[in-house]
Image (cartoon, rainbow, N blue to C red; front, top):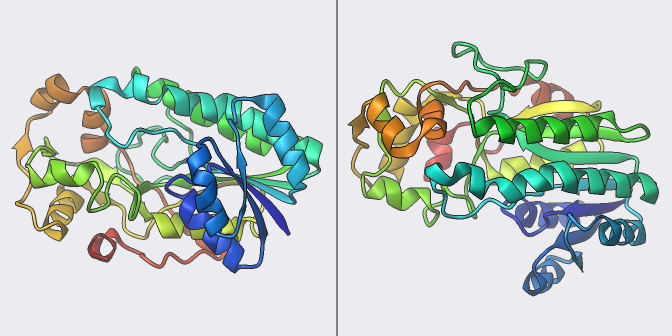
Length: 309
């Protein structure tokens, strides 16, 4: 089976491509960076250098690859995130989710692919007083600025992937990624903030996070190539947890001091509403559908052991 992976050298893509090759798939990987073509060759994939926002060139590349399945892991999220510049730093990713996804799905149709598997978010649900979210729950389309623009882009991505005639569209709603190549890696952007005591628990720390190890995220994409009915799947670990629980455990895994505490108002003034929302209000997600229909079993079922691993 031929598989075309867009975003093949991103955090998930570079874990996913070797898994696909190992499983016997013929993989073509799209990267925007010419220097990363050698990385794809080293992973025994056929590299294509291009931009998902260039619809014509993308269509030519996908048609030439003759894929049975197209996988989208398209993002452009900076390694160093500034919460006060959320709107600016997610601008290209929102374009990729809207325009890039539309280009990719359109190319998949022309190429005769039967299935599209795409990355989405498990923390874009409308808040519901701490209840774990299942896939039919609504997205947070009346959220505050600028988070609402990101949620709208997620909704558009999912609409195109699951609503295009002739395509079996599968959306993988990933939790907060940790592991190699992510911001929560020991050498990622978040770790030094925690080591320096610059990532506090806000208010009561009641925001419930669903994490997923990057390798488990990739393994779900492998399964989704041939399993599961079209639709959305929460790809998260088994233990959603409030920030007041996971953040001290993360600090301990790094050998750092326990995180300090700040008031909600102080955090709002310092870092803005997005971080405060995640710290105090976001809800976790339920992975039962992915386990049941994809047969997915995370190798890291809880962040408690996953952080240390």
